[in-house]
Image (cartoon, rainbow, N blue to C red; front, side, top):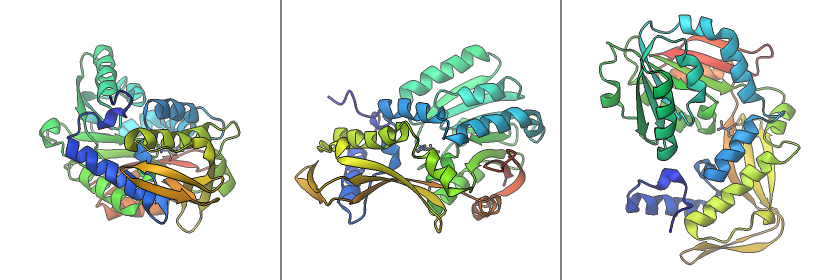
Length: 324
Ligand code: AVI
């Protein structure tokens, strides 16, 4: 009955759902099998991801909080004096709450794909900040960011796009550039993009962040197979796969993999089957790690220029402020 289907898929037309299902199945049938990381974030995956953010090994969330807390006033001083705060992938809106307590924001626009959660989270914000005009937009902004109506006249009220958490790091360059370019198109003269990204460091530190000692990330990775089973009617057994995270130095990215423990067959639904050999890999995620210079180049590739950058004492994580 679809009650367990990922929420993001609810309001989509049947044809679009069919396309996404085919894309998922084709990815699993390809010579180098892969699953789009968007399938991580079903109800169980969201809980596991929250747990990842609390792990000793997963430094990005903690460092971002540290940078925001340390430089909040400094960052704020670089933003327009009247603004609308555009929260990309707002989730529970908690990261933005800290900013809205002190920012001269007149409007808040929270954008997320998880519709039910989004309404609730934005209602909480509305109650807490009655002077701010809060609105919720359900959209997969990573594919289509058309916000003309929601933003109104950006010269009157410059938008500050807030894209934290190094989420941009999960996109390869072409998609990252196309998303950043679509943000740029909405900025106007005084609008800004406040975006965070994980920076390159000792590979051991990065690999541990994606392969923690108590196995939360392994559970998060394997959970994607349950999401695939729900979507495709496939019969993956998560315990037949092993979790691995490796840093690919040349591509400057962590690659998360699921490796078949032994040879076995998987029914992929609609008559499709695939045999996995022992050691065969399904790629589930890339998480790009940048130097500040390379992230500046990426922004420049989308027509954005860096105003300022803030980092932690070790230079492990970066917060960038950019303009058109
Ligand atoms: C959401 N995203 C920025 C996380 C990351 O670090 O790439 C997803 C994640 N995957 C494993 N751990 C965290």
